[in-house]
Image 1 (cartoon, rainbow, N blue to C red):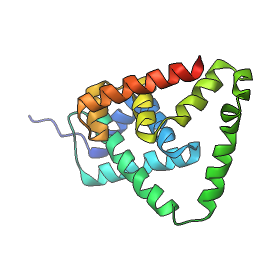
Image 2: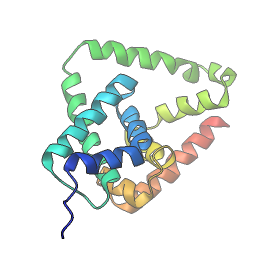
Image 3: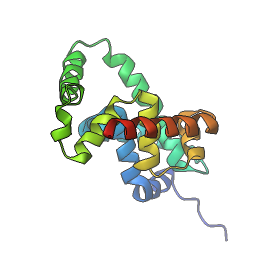
Length: 166
């Protein structure tokens, strides 16, 4: 007797249970807000369920789908003026770092401010490695980059963070 293949939604439900925190953390990195991160994760899950794709490594695959969807949403948002206001509000949070008053902030806050100042790609690599728990090979797959590029950018980003915190 052949067992019934599990439905696509069950496959992805198991993936979400196993990797939900890392997936949400990555969505939060991409969007910058919890509500948009939840929407992005849901949108990506619906897309992969509809596509009926079952990758060998679902976590990096889903992260790659989220990255592409987030880029698409960012392109659309650039055309909307209300996004400029949100960007200015986010920049105001970093003023403390720029004017030196960030030294009064707790270490965790200073670290997040430093991470937010990294270039987008470096920030994604650092957060995928530290918050997402991905290996350099998995990060390379998600970001569609060579492993050597991921490793070197990660090392450079860590150096920048160390320098910033000293």
